[in-house]
Image (tube, rainbow, N blue to C red; front, side, top):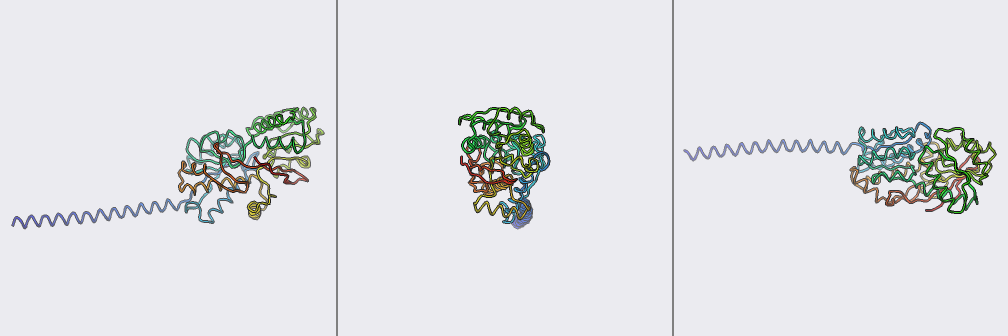
Length: 394
């Protein structure tokens, strides 16, 4: 009897264990299904990419073109299935070309929107305000157009798609000295902008090293609209050319006022001239002027012509260099995320360092300072239109 009771107890215990195990298995299975569903839900969410550019304020035409470049690149990726099998969404902030606004935009994108990367900003001062925030957060950033060398010096998470001011200023000086045969130059620049002061400095250094003479070197406060004082000093020094490495809203006025004061020679600038509003502001005064740039819509490269055609059909206007750089910068970032196989910031950063991308603004690989080594084009303004002159390689 005792053995029977013992056997019965053992059978009962085994039944309880089996039943409890089944319950546990069911719970475990249910939990796994829930987790799987959660993972699938996460995987179906779009990848958020921050975009920053000035679509209002003094550099609004830059921001409009750049933002359209961002959007066109994103649409092309999403049409092909997205990145890592997920759609990509642009979370955009307008920094108004103001460094304080830019810092706020970067903080919002990182802390509130939780973007995995940022493409922007446009002006060097704004990128310099935002880059430290991205660097501290470990969020990769690529500026499409900020040419000041200090931008990528902020840290190893910061990249750019454009050439830098030392190269652009050097190219301008060589063109002025070798092609325009100028031996005396006057310089006028905005002392309140990192971009402008950098270009002025590098132009002066290279022009003097070639044997040219800077006969006047005049700065003006940010926000100036009357440049007669500076221009009078420059013109009185009888330069062969005036170098004006500023933004289009200033350059148009500078050209008009220089012509009114009697200067008939060429005025040369940087990529900040690339805006349709330059002609609206400067009118005929900007004819016989030149500027260095990243891109020409007149290039015979099939990739460039395909981009120009598609962009023009979409937006009703030909792309400028800002649009092309915005397009390339976004493509570079999305390619890096795809190559990284992850949205982890450190992995994206490492993938960016190894990027090898053929863009519409040239072949892009990064040097040790995360700057691309690229060629520059010279554009001439004739009859209110941009005309491609030549390409100058690094």
